[in-house]
Length: 292
Length: 210
Ligand code: HEM
Ligand code: SF4
Ligand code: SF4
Image: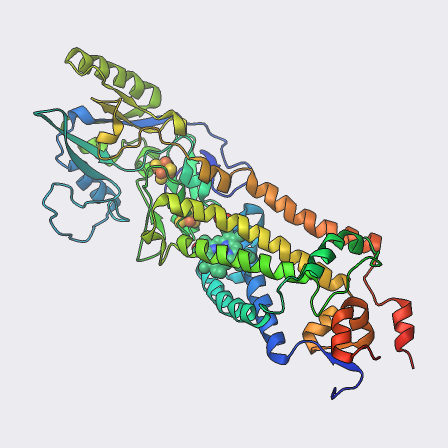
């Protein structure tokens, strides 16, 4: 939910233009995984700003807490212990949450007009008052992000603090990060900043350091700097080549309008058949046979 | 033989009630399903009290259809076994639609088209039920991996559209063939109607007499 109503590029299940009179600067949040110390300050800031409290869970013996995203935890830290070279343990910590895809699968899948919107600044937001609770967005999302609330049957996820951004503030997680691992600005500036970070990492021996801004979803508005950009899956299953995928394209692509036209054609065909051929009635001969 | 000497008994009261229960549930399912199918149909959700009610009601009406269609399936299953003569009938169905029924093999109580429709609908129902359960986010989707839910969504949408077009055809043929809606409403048909449209059944029922 947010305040910008003039800046919408796309609304779910809407075939007419969205209110997009104003063009805003494309923004991005850069998460530099190599700088993250896993303190979870961002998780706390997210709860604070959005005024959400998750249920107290149980300790799973690892730092992941809660262990997964929920309707009340829109971002979680995921901790992976990886040994790429034997004997050289690496602790890879990734802040998980909505990627704010340029081509969002959630928006494509949603059947309810205006339940998912994409602002011209790139933020993908759920407008819960329009949400019907079908969960199609979960089916459509290549990053497994939206969560359906048991309480109100609406879906929730990271808003990229669209309410703060609308008022010229940075997202709460960015504001709170003590190491500067999360930064926010124009997408262009963030890509530039990422390049500098990658050059630095390469000079320190991380030859495969790189940016994660996956082209399969036309880029994202949450981007990562990874020390092993060639193996995103080692960061607790970050998809290597995410895309909306053939199944969801088939489900939500051109087939739907075509099938709708086909249904119309069946109705029109039937009408034309009736008008041209006339009804199928008992023939005169048989009627005569049964008279008297 | 007949209580009413003029008309032939075609469908019993339980068969008719069953048919109309299926029809009613199906129409509600088609309207609520279409509302979610494409934005052009979303206004249909108003018939159900809005989008949220449409989402809640659709799968439960589906469960009602499972029972009513299931019961109809067991009632008509034997009657709908296709014979070689039915396949022959189907090969000539195009001529029939063109208004020329001279080459049609004699149809029994149900013709080849009606029998084929029965099996196609049964196949659609099976696919819709299986995929519908996988898509039912409130109770079942959490049991399945995303790839299965995506496949189910494609199967459900495609089969739903397919079944809607089959039923549109079914409704049209009932309108086209005069007096056949009366057969399903009141259970009885005129002898002349039976001889015209289901000659083999007419002979079986009357021994060929008028
Ligand atoms: C038989 C049991 C059925 C079950 C359990 C079922 C269940 C579902 C579910 C769970 C959905 C997802 C939306 C929602 O949560 O409401 C759905 C969508 C849909 N259903 Fe069904 N359904 C059934 C039968 C049917 C039938 C008979 C039709 C055809 C008339 C149909 C047509 C549709 C359509 C067109 C959609 C939208 C699909 C899309 O756009 O992806 N369903 N159904
Ligand atoms: S990550 Fe998922 S929920 Fe977020 S914008 Fe992309 S498709 Fe939508
Ligand atoms: S759950 Fe809500 S936001 Fe998600 S697809 Fe359904 S209506 Fe759209």
